[in-house]
Amino acid sequence: MVIRVNVEFLAKDAVKAVDRGDLIVIIDALRCSSTIVTALANGAKAIIPVRTLDEARRFHAENPNYILAGERGGLKPRGFELGNSPLEYTPEKVSGKIIILTTTSGTSALTYSRGAKWIFVGSFLNAKAVAEKSISIANAEDIGISIVQAGTKGRFSLEDFLCTGAIVNELSKSESEVELSDAAQASLLAFKDAEDDLLANIMKSNHSKKLIELGFTKDIEFSCRKNLFSIVPIYRKGIITKIE
Ligand code: MLT
Image (tube, rainbow, N blue to C red; front, side, top):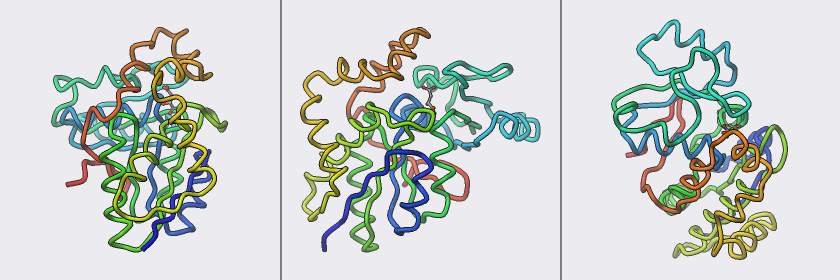
């Protein structure tokens, strides 16, 4: 069996992956997917992604024990307990907790994917784990894999493209036969070219520049660490948990 690997460059195009019946891997390397992976790796019970600030605040008012978290313009919104910095999501703060998360692009990519049976969250931090789990499910269910990049405010983003390449690289190592779309092949070529100096290359992206300006350089450094965690977040019935 050959597993087809597709790539979508924008959050809203997750619906195309849903229509294909593919397993979806959502990527927002800076920083939403890195934050989700880190929170779950550090013991968070679940993450509930929501699209708007209002929705997040309303939901929190109904569930005051949950942590209200996220960003707008990269910064923690008024009244929120945590921002969107993966480094804030320490075991002390998140272990055993349920987190309501709203970010500019990442959480909306997740909500656009809702119709799919399998939705995973990928980042550099868990590239190998998410690739291995995706291959095993795609094989078992005879479906393709779509990597959906959240992008930045509706535009293509370099860091998500390189992260796609990192995951495609892991998919290509599998014993299963994979057939890469042109976009998947391009991401792999870009990743291989950038890999030896990944951080410096990611630092060239527009979103990195914005995060550096805001004082979040350490988030970029952390988010570029490959395969630090072996967990795979799964988004199902509106909630993200660790797949067992
Ligand atoms: C987003 O979802 O747009 C990003 O995670 C923004 C950020 O870096 O905070």
